[in-house]
Length: 398
Image (tube, rainbow, N blue to C red; front, side):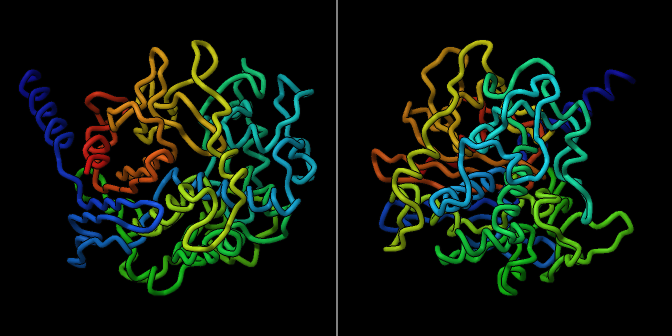
């Protein structure tokens, strides 16, 4: 009986692992524009709506890269400094309890070298709450490694970045990102729905698990009743927002809703070193600084996989990381960060959450790139020749 039960469970797990995504979108591009588009499946099963390359999806951790574009615009404007102690903007001392004499900077936060972990949480700070309280939990800190000495991918770094951006500008993070990045590039996108236009809201891609059950953005063509984590009393009055109190509110680490075509436009911006279709968003040196690896894996100096339960990668997944930007195909023993399998050092970022996998990868040498996402995937994802999943390895190929 026990053997039969285990066999049945194995068969279920195997079928889920082999299941096709609910939706896939892939957009190829070069510096001049989109060169090819492939779309398959459903954006919304219940509504019978097929997916398109213009439908916005919660793109997961690629959100971090777009957040970093906003940071660099503020750096260029003199509002922020990558290497200054962020405590000056936060208004309270951000310090590692075991290493209180080491300042924590935007450079360390953006490159996941600030000594933080996700063990105390990072996204469920309610409206009206204080992100600072998460940092009071000892689990939020790596007990061994001082800031600047170790790479440990931690989502909480980016709510802190957003808090700094809000304090420096006085603007709500989602609106600030509209002004700094999305509107100048002509991209209909938003962090956590509040600042998206009605047409984008109506085209939301529903995120499904491997059993095709909706887990995020099953909005039925409408705005969600509350686009953020509601207040402790269940209310959702965004008028309670206060600059810098809760940078997690609009999910800078993963909450960007953007289409495949919008993502391709970000990729073309990277290929153009800050310029796309005649719009100069950033200086070329700013884009190069984002891409320049701040950390390259060597035994003992960092973790090559993500610790949370998103299913993101395995050992050897992260091996080179800049300011919210990965570099692939690291020629170091133990690195398995080449889903393309061709040894090309592409730059960009991956994403994984709520049954979605995504990627934005550009090759500056050839001037080409690819943006993609897939929904309805299981959490446990096995790859073939790399630490990426088999779905990603397939989607990066033409």
